[in-house]
Image 1 (cartoon, rainbow, N blue to C red):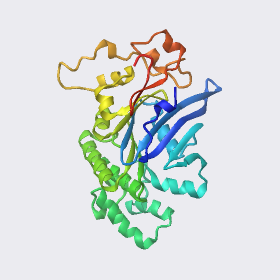
Image 2 (image 1 turned 30 degrees about the vertical axis):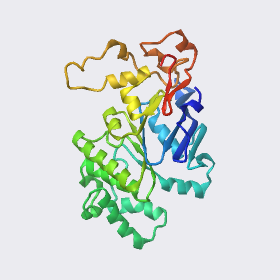
Image 3 (image 1 turned 60 degrees about the vertical axis):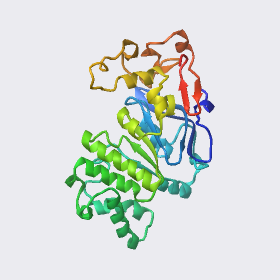
Length: 329
């Protein structure tokens, strides 16, 4: 796949640029060492102030990619360039500053907080880690609770004393503590009830507008992605198969996997419930330990032909922001 073709148009508003990023793990398989290709040759750009969403089935490499961006995982190959600086080349002090600016909101709010710590300590921990004066911490904690619409008396409670939605608000508050400008949202609403999801999504939208935040939003829920995103990338077995603006992905999808994902979204009208046979996926996602030759999607694709087994499809550009890796897009 051409790395150049997977890039969005360059410009001064580019905040993060990912070039040919791959991440491999060595794992035990049938008693022997095997290579698991979690992320393979991924390239994309994220503009300041936008929400760049990554969608795909479980196990496609979305979360691994998110962790590589802040070097919580070391990439096997490729570059992550944040505001002109190669993240992989940053030494201790510069890397520490980067992590102040790139924060995470995790999927499960309960497991991502220490149940033995009060909220006051949970929110103050990142501030203490970066030597924020204690005189400023109290005021900052009050600001954080206000930003996520929680009451001041929340500071003296433990995580188990909150509802799921309130706990997620606390995780968001902790991510905001150090005033970052880039936040990786790793399926931040998938563990919540639908009604609570809407509240948290609206909160994220408001925070982005008020604080000029950039989001990398990881999800498998297309309805959430459609509401939040400026651009969307579709991943399959570690690779990006289609990248485009929200309207391009949802109104004019070109990759058969993207079409199948959109067709599978539950609908309420009787006419729209039937999934056309040409869009139905059969079988399971292949193992990243032994991916298919050529196009990884070919084993489930209704349009697969001989060339799909022989050659990895090149990414082709259909508009400045719409890129598709498919022989027959």
